Length: 91
Picture 1 (tube, rainbow, N blue to C red):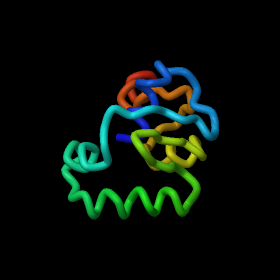
Picture 2 (cartoon, rainbow, N blue to C red; picture 1 turned 60 degrees about the horizontal axis):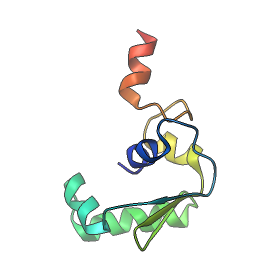
Picture 3 (cartoon, rainbow, N blue to C red; picture 1 turned 180 degrees about the horizontal axis):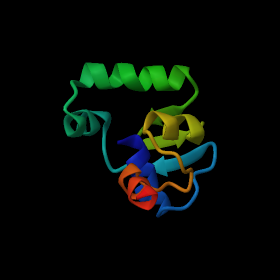
């Protein structure tokens, strides 16, 4: 979900390291959207922060390592194309 939010904000363009993105959602909203409890969602975010992938604070997401986030999101192309689009291109 974090990758898709970044893709939408960047309008499909490349996502550079340390890209800051304003989010209209709270962590609680994102937990609800993913079907996770707030506690579990916060644990995942903490793990991503500890790994230097993403930081969330005050409705801002900083993508520190876009390659790592893309790998977690199962995206091959850092041009921010969603997985479904990449699969269509492969045929």
